Image (cartoon, rainbow over all chains, first blue to last red; front, side):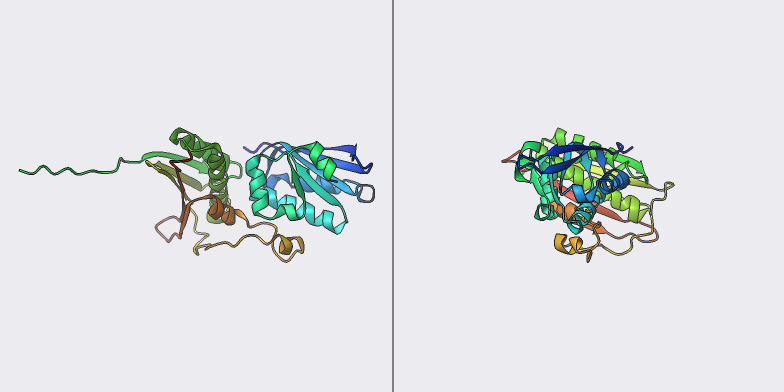
Length: 119
Length: 157
């Protein structure tokens, strides 16, 4: 019943010239999304990936288990000294992410361009 | 002779859905609740609030109430009144006998330090997004249920 979570990684360069890994998610982010969210993140080479962007543009449904996975990713990124930002969330899920405190550890931006500029 | 006139509130329109205790089927209840709310004239942002609350209530019923037993189902009854939509989400299990109570806002700092489980935000979201929430514990005869109420804001809708 759940739309399988797909994730792919794209390498970009920030306006300041730093390498940025963009994790582009598609489908639902729920309890079944661990491999797509955490697995894809953990496959990034940490040393050469100081900046990470999470793209939620093609995500329609996120539940509390999915939010918990995002927090797990943020914990690992914090422990590795990486900076994480997110973009493409709907107005509703931006509100929900804000309600649980995520912006303190990952900036939320409407678009990829705005997120890249903030890195 | 004095004519007496009794005014009674119109009977709520009721829609019922029953979904299996399998993760993902909460979306069926969520979509149905959204359709009912749309017909009632709720704003899109309030419908999004309702969708998240109904999905989280169903997930709690599937996971904690019915303990993922696919032989048990989750009943969702939506009662559309004149100025509010009430949604009851009922499990068939015997797993939850104590009321979860008011769930405080998640402490993101504690979660980031590993001092608080990164999960467990469902009840908080339900309470924060709905106008009224009541949790009723079941017993040997009756199922437990959570009752959510979202009110139409006549001025803003």
